[in-house]
Amino acid sequence: MNKSKLRLYPAAFSALTVTLALAACSNDEPGKDPLADGPVAARVTAGISPTTRVSIDVTDKNRASFTDGDVIHVVTGNSTYNYTYDGSDWSPVSSPYYFEDTDPVSFQAWYADPDVKVENNVISIDTKTQEYDSESKWNAHDILVTPKVTTTVASPEISFTNRNAFRHIMSQITFTFKAGDGISNLDRMSKYTLKTLTTDATFDALACTLTAGNMTGNIAVSPSCGAVIEYTCRPIILVPQDVTNGELTLEVVYNYESYTATLALPKNATALAEGTHYTYTVTVSNTGLKIDNAEIADWIEEAPSNGNATLK
Image (cartoon, rainbow, N blue to C red; front, side, top):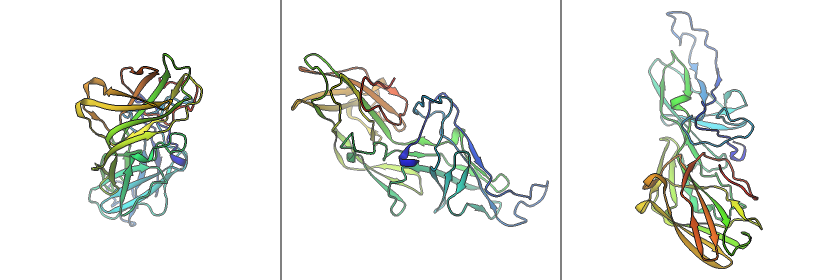
């Protein structure tokens, strides 16, 4: 997606399916060998899963979609075939996949920010790089993956739609801060930190699997709240992981004073789940922090940068 501008829309809606016939097969007469005229190119369809917690587009709340220029990576065996979206169809970036025999073939696909580096078919993830709210690319670590799809040359469409559509495999958290007693606005809030989390992971671009790492640390963010009484920060992408007692630790620095609070995961959960977006409202006062109940929300593209913003 152009600078990862993936527009993802509500879970209740069906995924948009986009289809491209990469090579029209003239061998569709009954009983005729589909490979009689040589290898057959695959056709690709792709969409975002309707079960994914996805973001709301105020202009169109009835579909889930990729945007022009997005590239998905279709994997089979040890080979990857890249397909790009032009607004209506998918086409191969270089060469398509060709069926060369009648055996079943399994495919899987993934999507990540185009600036993410893939080295030796591995993406290394370090979520501590989200240190500066106003400058960081908040969703650089967001990765979407499909289930495996098996098909043959007799039905040469690789369909990553419906139950086989793309899903988020990372976790996400967003904070809305409010000025409370004794605080006129949030201008002097200089930092907030999520403490003692697993911060690294690796994504195998051939197996399409995410593996949490062994690094434990803090994720510190320096928001640019300004002189407002309520501010919704950009989301933080997190490695899915177990959480001790289902609780996270949040530290907020306001006017050079540190305030700490415990955040309970919703519904008695004990892990940050993949594809799930957690939201917290935190009221900052001169005596401490008040935490409203956590909620699970849509997977948003980007929060507003100032004003009385809310995610609901």
